[in-house]
Length: 210
Image 1 (tube, rainbow, N blue to C red):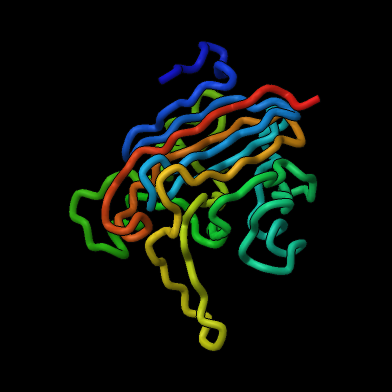
Image 2 (tube, rainbow, N blue to C red):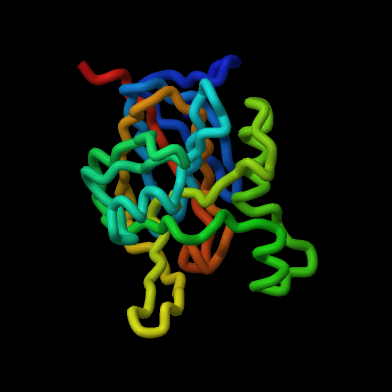
């Protein structure tokens, strides 16, 4: 698997693995495409995006869902920033079910929901570590776009239920960047989100399209 360069850029057109329960951050230039791949099936990947040139501009669940008027986003849907600018566009999606409602899992998630005595730092901790070299603080981390996460909502009660992902081995989602970005990406650390087991995530950055 390829490794990132020292300046945060990645080799193009090469598949990179994010190991189980970990995360990383990298630069994605305007026009480049990011493909997030579930190599074994049933594994979630939390995705963050920050404007490279002004990191106070971040991916926004609220704006994206508001403008789409629905909670399930897929091919041809844009992902907006907190300033209503398009950061990413979904250009290909073999799954069609992702979550943009629930925040990255954290030590507190595992303590409060699962009662863990020695909780893992979760996606939040992994993302915080990954983006820290870019000057991004933990309090700057927004709700992530959770690739492959299968959250369903009861239309009458509003109850949320996290079910196993429907993604199969090799399924993927591809985004095209509308601006220069810092991207954070994980292999999710919550058992419930991943159908009871932890697996790696693969991703690839492709060259700018003509």
